[in-house]
Image 1 (tube, helix red, strand yellow):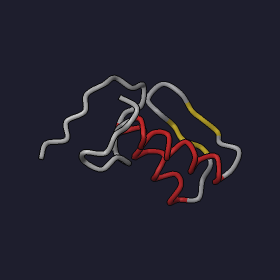
Image 2 (image 1 turned 90 degrees about the vertical axis):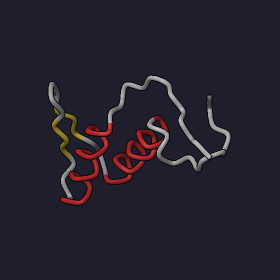
Image 3 (image 1 turned 135 degrees about the horizontal axis):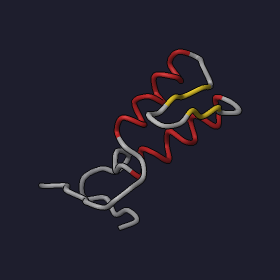
Length: 68
């Protein structure tokens, strides 16, 4: 069964990796190519991580209905 869902999102896998590296390191600052984001708390970072994963289709199981 193929699970190819294609839609555009502002998030990239690189963004997600950088955020997860910051979470693992215990820092609240994430530097992307053109900007630096300071998160208020670990809880906020985890919420953003989950949002990124959803947007990138990484939380969805193959065949599961999603937003699109």
